[in-house]
Image 1 (cartoon, rainbow, N blue to C red):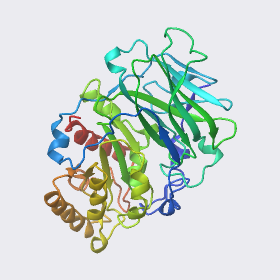
Image 2: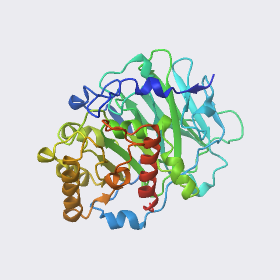
Image 3: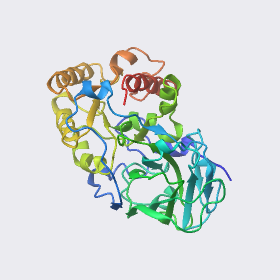
Length: 386
């Protein structure tokens, strides 16, 4: 049975204003604790530049990541495994029992791309920070990542699996694991515990990552970003792939409805923990007042974590005509003060007076506006050569 996701169900709890909390766990996110224990075995150099300037971020120099798992032979303990690695973001593999496993045969991938790799998985039904696992999330809680050097071209091997990562009490809806594949032909994720006692549901990608997660993007922000970059309904990676054939950036929606630059302070450490990517988008401001705008502190936290902060202008809305320009002046000053910042799109200029995209009396883009917003972000990502 194929599992496609329902947009209305995911966005049901997103309110009519940006201050409305997102589904599941947004309201409790400010008090989120650690994201669970994780052990990675044989892990090589970490990802993300330390104190990289925006110029360095945009100038390349690192070997690019490349998605190598799309449509390779996929197998699962139960359920249609190829739902996990097709090109459709709105489908995902769902097991019919636990324990469960999902395995990819990558034996036909060139050996040069089966060295350092990055495995990324995504669970659609939970917020990025999970404070209370619930059955409907079908979230992996305890799992291991394994490799096997047995020959490909047939059924997955029954023995000889080597553990490369182990996670217990996971509390995020998306994780990445960087490890040396050492030319092995098989990769498997085995789940022993889920938020649903009977099944688990996820997408899983495998990247060749000679320079780590150099094209990983964590989108943090409020409900505008939450509704726009949800993996199941976002074509942002596809927009980039369309313009740069073969490049599929790793995009994680870490936004939470109702947040601003004050409430984000409390969750920034947890949001950045266990994210191996290079870029962290800070798309805040719509829920802020200019006199209380604390973007600089968030920028400092991202830089201290060895990542590149990406800061867009606050989007235009006829509800922000007074404070929007003041907030964007503050952001412009940060561009000058912190050369490490990669400027994001000018969302004020892009949306200005576009009531067909952000209707009167609202701060949220409509469906057409969300696609337009992703197109603006695609231009930013296309300007970066990881």
